[in-house]
Length: 333
Image 1 (cartoon, rainbow, N blue to C red):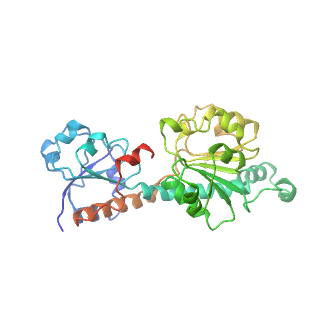
Image 2 (image 1 turned 90 degrees about the vertical axis):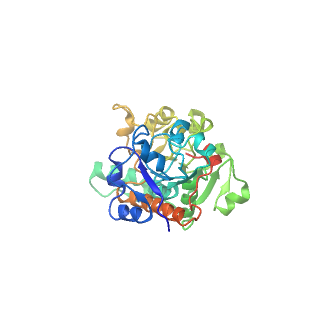
Image 3 (image 1 turned 45 degrees about the horizontal axis):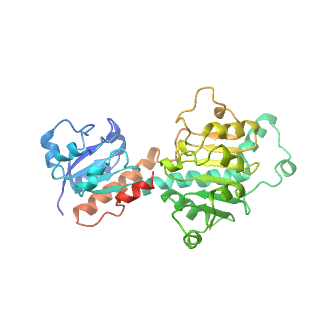
């Protein structure tokens, strides 16, 4: 098994946290790599770049432009130990025939787990119960107060059969949910195979008790939940967004949340950090988190492990298990 010359390319300080535990040893066992340094831009160390066969990238990786690729004539593969590659993979990469792999599937795992927890908590009205309990400091009369709540045959609407969306659908199978799915790239039979009924987006909004957004950030998905579509959501419905903030008109949603008509679990917003005076921070019907649904803490190790596995496959002449095709980027995050 040969060991290709490999370079770490990512934001400053990331590699020491990313390649913790035995990850450095594992990577060094399959590749010639200097694990003490990372490339944060491609303007230095021309000799090293000229020898590079594999780039091992993560958050903050600099863009691979045509000019950069001319300085890396031996580059054959980019292995990204994180999710989206849109920030550094340019059209020039595909023109040069470079193979790209991503650990997006590994990052999908915690997002789907977070979403499942949010769906289950939404049906049980956990936020409401917690706030009521904290305010009264006595056992509330649950039967009349929360009549109609629960997770038995609640309708869950999944927006987007993306990698994460499909994993959420898999996690929902053991439960007694009625699942709807909107994805313009799928047919009804494909949706049924995934355990859901295919519907239009407006119908999904009207019928769902919980709506979870898993669509990519594209020009055509900007504000897919705009003021009109948010108004279609039934009273008491919960909107979950772990995708991108731009998919939901935050101002329009906030107006409904202030009245108490809707509930929300928002891991992403537009802007990314709401203004300090935003009511989203204090509304009792909102769970607002700072983009934590994806890999966090020891979950980063899963992405690293998957990426090192890809380098190992490359050294054995095997195809990547998680190769990224250029056409995927037109409909993925």
